[in-house]
Image (cartoon, rainbow, N blue to C red):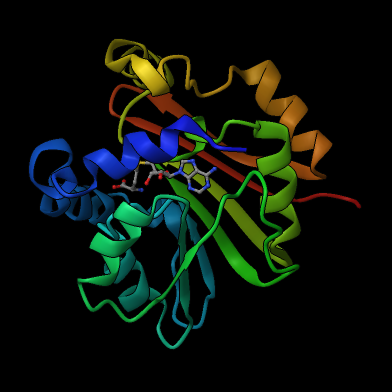
Amino acid sequence: MNDPRIGFFDRLSADWDHSEQDPRQTVARLEELSHLLRLEPGLDVLEVGCGTGQLTGWLAAKVAPGRVTALDFSEGMLAQAQAKGIDANFQSCDVCRDRLPSQSADLVFCFHSFPHFRDLDAAMANLAGALRPSGRLIVMHLASRAEINAFHDNVGGEVAGDHLPDERRWNELLAGAGLCQTAWIDRDGLFFLEAEIGDR
Ligand SMILES: C[S@@+](CC[C@H](N)C(=O)[O-])C[C@H]1O[C@@H](n2cnc3c(N)ncnc32)[C@H](O)[C@@H]1O
């Protein structure tokens, strides 16, 4: 499957940190919201859709000696991230296609990435399978669901229609992957969903 979003993000990659999203503001906002993430030394984190690694170094410092494995399917984005010398494992991966290592992560973190996964059912099953039994999935945006969906429609092209699901669809996705929702925030400037493994 040649996802047209790969070319879209490849084209944006060189300018991402300069004109799309300010890395200092991203880290500062995450620091303010870090109580939600409950990051602790020793956690192994899978960051899915890491882009240029704006948060990867911050995450790595929070969880060391745990490790961050940072995944993306845009080689352009990955090249930008890898050039930063961050102490993390960067890997090329299409989360809708490439099987993630089973039960390898204490936290699977999707920051500003989930709506772009072209097959949400396949991605969710893959993300859930990567969680250790006590692991957590977090999907997070520095905008509400409505703000994100309107923004992607406004950008148009390859990402028009890349929406965060509504509550009914989230329930379906999580249940289908054997996950239970443990937190939900949807307000101006923040979308935060956390889920854990239910009975499976
Ligand atoms: C909006 S960018 C956000 C990047 C980064 N998290 C940030 O906040 O700067 C979304 C990222 O998700 C990646 N992505 C989209 N679909 C993907 C997929 N199926 N597998 C892996 N990465 C994907 C894109 O290549 C892009 O780097």
